[in-house]
Length: 403
Ligand SMILES: *[C@@H]1O[C@H](CO)[C@@H](O)[C@H](O)[C@H]1NC(C)=O
Ligand SMILES: *[C@@H]1O[C@H](CO)[C@@H](O)[C@H](O)[C@H]1NC(C)=O
Ligand SMILES: *[C@@H]1O[C@H](CO)[C@@H](O)[C@H](O)[C@H]1NC(C)=O
Ligand SMILES: *[C@@H]1O[C@H](CO)[C@@H](O)[C@H](O)[C@H]1NC(C)=O
Ligand SMILES: *[C@@H]1O[C@H](CO)[C@@H](O)[C@H](O)[C@H]1NC(C)=O
Ligand SMILES: *[C@@H]1O[C@H](CO)[C@@H](O)[C@H](O)[C@H]1NC(C)=O
Image (cartoon, rainbow, N blue to C red; front, top):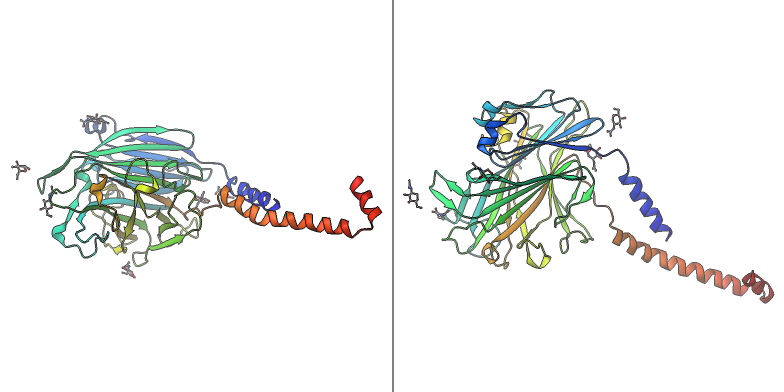
């Protein structure tokens, strides 16, 4: 049992360092009537720490985006709304230059006809692929709430109408964003381990109508990822395996995409990351029995930012000191019955600053280790005491036992 206390002690020491950040949010900061009339959503979340502030911008004016900026405590966000709503570059800035910024945009929603049930979009020809532009959804707020440990924004994209191709689609895409101030596992399966340094993006395809000429539809996303840094450096993807699936039943892998570490005046290494578990749930109960896999593809270099999102409004046309990559992720694997089986699919990922937090041993594992190591130790000690006592002369032994 000695190990047990030692591990618990280490755990407490690990998690109790530093005071928690304070979460504050504002909807459409400084916009007023114009945004109310347009029903537009630009959500500004601040996680204020003792030395710096983490700003998260969740935006649905352009393609759904998350921008993360680390600034001094005094820096303020500044949006020139007239310019921003007409999609002009550099219409968003901070009153002081941020120490580090990192952003992600959902660039495309991809639908493909997986004729040979391979699960992958590789080798699918263009006529079996449809590209949906997230900006053609009507994005409305379902809810926003704040509690002690987190802030949540629930967005619904519906009434998809693509004026270029004259295509409309019924059904919904839901995106639930969460910001936190503690190191904890999310309540929502796959129970990602989040901290104050990350935003969780829960992407749900909820009875969104597929292409009726596609018999074997699957969906996917194209993300664009932007970080300050050397354009010739590379982002990296790493798949970590674990022995423990307590938090995400049946899933023993975590995929991490990290930006290269950047030397800045303030810190030796600034970086950002995406993190997810390669799983998609096919019903809102999120059981392991109705789940399938997700697949990610290679990172692709980009030379500039598309002008359809908040990232363009913030970074502008310049790309000399930006590292810009795209990545595709698709949902589904061979034999899962395709999207049409349930007409529902999820994908959950974290957008974070710094290094992704490492999984602590769970209490269950600690208990198992303690029993595994502690119990034999205990038995050995008892056995040792017993033999010692037996070896003593009889009178001595009974005296020992009686006292
Ligand atoms: C805040 O800054 C001080 C001095 O620069 C440093 O000693 C301290 O560790 C920092 N605290 C945090 C939480 O980063
Ligand atoms: C369905 O896919 C076909 C072939 O790619 C395309 O021509 C058509 O516009 C799509 N229909 C819808 C509703 O997306
Ligand atoms: C604005 O959004 C709300 C839901 O948040 C919706 O009920 C309402 O119809 C929307 N208004 C317009 C003009 O789109
Ligand atoms: C767009 O599609 C609808 C039916 O899907 C059709 O009635 C309409 O004429 C089309 N408009 C154009 C400009 O092609
Ligand atoms: C991106 O481009 C840089 C230099 O232009 C190159 O070193 C790097 O390998 C490329 N990365 C990928 C993923 O293609
Ligand atoms: C959050 O990031 C800061 C700065 O990189 C780091 O000091 C802190 O330990 C991180 N918090 C967690 C829980 O990882």
